[in-house]
Length: 159
Image (cartoon, rainbow, N blue to C red; front, side, top):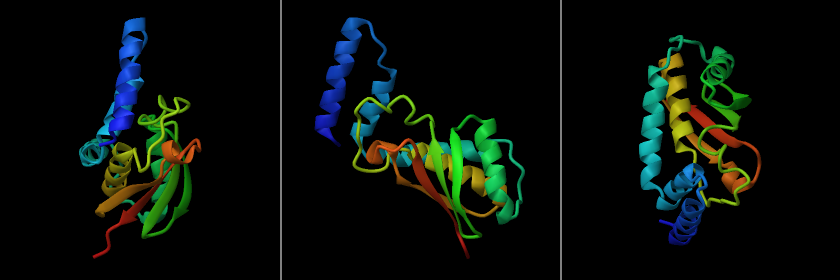
């Protein structure tokens, strides 16, 4: 747990409450400060959500990037750019997604990945599309890099 970050965010929340300002985005920051135990929970929730979306199943790996772009757009997950795609991985950049869009420009930085919900969501979507077990990981977070996108890698499990 990052106690300094949590303390800073709680102080900001207190000040905002006193001034009648919104604190919704700071609640997400407080979760960030709690650390890695929440990453697994958020990944699981994202993965489960990804598997219940209405998606065409049994897709060939070559079609997944195109279909993934369509699903991300249809469900307003963010703006996506596919960086690399093969029958083993899909690597992408995701902008303006729910975990970070309210935190950009607030001066909040992380030391590690923050977007485990989106990683799980992407894994669940691609897993359902392909009928192949997948794992996704955020490899660069905009709260770490300062860029306007987060990068994810989705890996297909090979038997």
